Image (cartoon, rainbow, N blue to C red):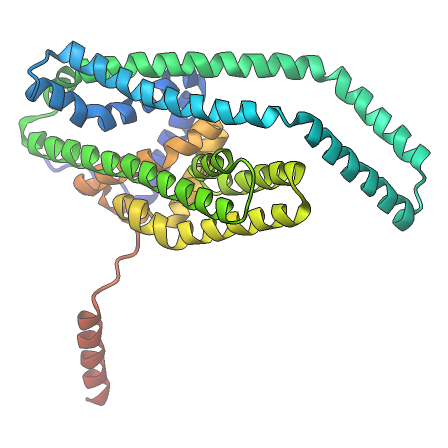
Length: 369
């Protein structure tokens, strides 16, 4: 029996309906899907370490997975502890920061009075009005902050637990996927699985390598400029740089603000210029070489994916957008009926220069004839 092939506009309508349904389910199932998707990425990252414990040290699967997750958690905790020490050191200069902000505020008042002829009493009344509104909403702000911190801690716990279970039962999950399809697709499934493992490991390790380079570069440049809290600001720039498109500007604002509060405006300007220079170096050279070469995604699709990820799940969705777009592209490229969508997700392939010259010669000959 010949398979029925619907027109393109009907197939496109089905795709749009499926995408809308998936987006709705993603919003409803955020509490379950978010830690599970992070855990899947971390499990792929820790898989070589788990295989090392199982194959080289002859450990059983559960201890190997547990030790791998604990080592990863310990390394992340060490980084957070070092950052906490730097923040505690910064808090010791709180009186200086208050004096700097008070001086800035006083100068701003004088400028407003001389430029717009707004006297000090009107400015003070306006500020008191704003502060009263801020105090009325401070209780809800504190409540939201506590809730956010507890949600982050709960998310981390679930990510660690899910990662451990995914590493332990990875072969069972693979057997389920293979059994769910007919025998003719088994080789394609194993090929897709191998490509996904390779791309995600390279992508995450590339991000970590990029973060280390950006952190070291920022620390060195800040130290040469005589900026205070070099290590804290360097880590801040390196970590926030991982947030696509908005992270580097957040790092610029925070770094310049801390420098202005602990030094002067000239050093704050230097910090802003250094962060912008690092961003240009990263986006034009480092990111395409270290990370971009692993995913090979269309920049337009990346931007749309990051925006949609933020709309669905906020900042965690922005982190998850790029790796899961890369996974989707791998699947689309290997399924014949979805290869057109894989082309849409990927970069435009340019033929080599030799091929371009040959095509140009053929066209010139045809025009001459």
